[in-house]
Length: 255
Image (tube, rainbow, N blue to C red):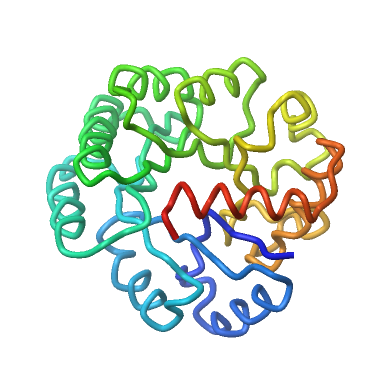
């Protein structure tokens, strides 16, 4: 199987001692492509260094994570725009809304998302969305901006069938990760009704490791476990899941 990990923080400090080995393990199980979301100004150097060292396997996005949106968010966004004007990136992201941890900067998060959506349209790039306790608000912003050119993915999707239908109706894909393997992850409630063409696979490593590694550091080599779970829920073979999701990722990110 050839697989694409559409969302992986492989540049994270958690891989400082064994990043090369983790990427080798991924390649050995068929994860030949890894798309890396940015967080904020502190992650750019590590992310781009990883891409430079593994240019055939790792591809960088550029964006500002909602949990990094604060009083100085405009300065962060200026840096994002500056980088987008310098060189190619796979996507704008990850960006979005996160009302789970802190609602201090809700208005700033919303403005930061609008700005990054506009940048995605300006540079003809997909937008990679992080939503936590904020799906409806995120979808509202996307809907207001959708002119037929906006595309992207709701990453780490674990919502309802109605939310899945809305995301797909907006022209977006659903990123399916380790939560799909959790006993009460909820994937069985919406995935069987979703056409395979609308799905991407992701690990979101080092977070949200799939069963049986739940609670441990996640890594791209665990992606086949997610592929097998999706195959089980859709009544397909893992090979069919791998082929379709890899093709979708290549089309979306222009890899």
